[in-house]
Length: 351
Ligand code: SF4
Ligand code: SF4
Ligand code: SF4
Image (cartoon, rainbow, N blue to C red; front, top):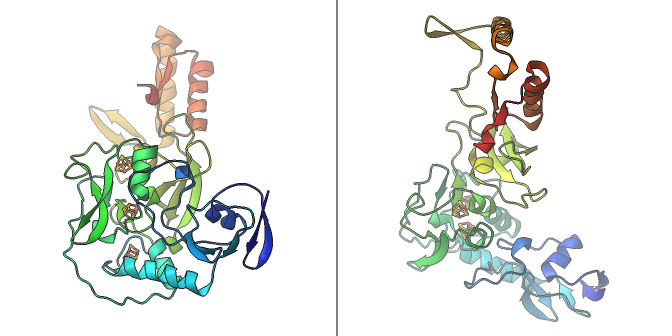
């Protein structure tokens, strides 16, 4: 147990942690672009902190994310010099940032936008650097280095958690930004997991959604679900508007701890896809025709009864889909094992 003076009050702190974590646990929001609990005990060769989480500790400005709490510390979280320093960080970030929030996909869920508004930042310079090329080569997401604030979060996720090392920070014409090991994402060994996209606090890494379906954060709701693609049970927060899924983010709860694979992150587009069947089809004289469910069920039961009578239950095999829920898969195997009477049942996740 520690005791510190926090904003002029004696405050007990239960455990040794960063000042940022301790303050957050006391309900004090400290701004940060790059902080992530998952990197706390990992060293990283490049300088990748954003520098906005400053607070006053014993009369000096210190980064709250990398300072460990100590007994007797005097901490001020919102003094004038703290606010001034945070403003300077934000002003530097937007110096050459393309402020196109009105058309940016990230608007409404962008930390840079939120903090600039909260701290009353006004752009003081109109520095116009040569636009860096957008990498649009991946079918799943785009990289716009012009919007990158070089917080390094994507680099750390890719290197430390995904173990893929595709991204790094570099500098072009005085602007520090994210870049790809290999000419483009498509030419790199990117696993398309999208974990870099999920952590980017601004609009530099943007997922490609279904064309024609867009919604601002405030018009969409978040729906927690369990990924059905395999047995891990990753928790996903779907962004849903107008009964359509517009995006998927990993939940930090559950077994996935803020990560997903390519299927969980980007494999939701089949749900609302226009190619999906909306009625059963029956093949007649070589051609498929639309049928009612009554017609289809009647045909299925007739055929099953006939084959059961002539060849027995082991003439059947059932293959289920990872795009069905766990409960639907359970019912399907129940149908095969107890109704039809065969153990010839398998699932596409084992192929
Ligand atoms: S990344 Fe954020 S600040 Fe930049 S244009 Fe997009 S919404 Fe605006
Ligand atoms: S999608 Fe995954 S593998 Fe590819 S750059 Fe991002 S984190 Fe790395
Ligand atoms: S792309 Fe996003 S997460 Fe990566 S360094 Fe730039 S701002 Fe940070």
